[in-house]
Length: 344
Image (cartoon, rainbow, N blue to C red; front, side, top):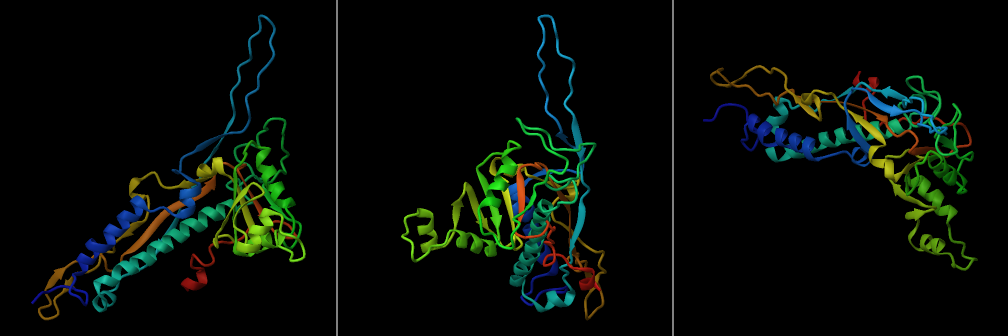
């Protein structure tokens, strides 16, 4: 008679680890990337990243003149990683009462939780109006006090890329044009894209709505009347996602999108990605003979990930909040991370 610990369909606990847990985690780290990391992130480590904070200027010289030495000034920025854990724990009882075919579904749920955490933190960084880790606001690092000038444009210390519509509903295109202008006057030209919640898609449909008493001569009105709003309008490609909180819109200069945010990981290769840890679980003993028959590291195992994010191209995006009041930073992790009360 076989001894050891087995699932209902007679798969050894260590086979569960080697057949499902380890290969799925390895494939996840090698090939899978959270949506917003894939779209907007450049991967960096915790070391310093340099940003130019001014532009070199020429000088008119006489016949025998030579320019004075110049050095472009840089500001250094870095951010420590944060530690996140996923306590999907396999108990002896769970494995003994389940079949091996159910294990991949359980692992898939854990990987989805990891992806949700990464997406929420990356997107949340773009909403950060209080620190120099977000888009352009009144906070700067390393002695910088204003955004760099561009062309004929110079900017005040109070310049911000966190805008409000001034109205409780998005009823005009003025705020959309202002968001595009805020990127363009830094040299971050289009094409532009926007992330938007389904609630605010409704607002846009109302702006472009069809009135039954008016002939449908406008192609935008005609398309919205038949199919509802989707696609491109006002020079912006619109993408609906329920990751966006209601009444917030993020506008992004698409040429800068792939390096908009720094995705920070530890330098140590062993700490990159989703890491599986095993407790030193005691030996399993045969029920009849009480003889130790094996060690099962899958029991009481758990996952950790170390990462963080900050905005690299602070001028290349704008957040618009649809509100008649002042800008308030939303919280995106309520449905993603456990609160202290949940853990109590």
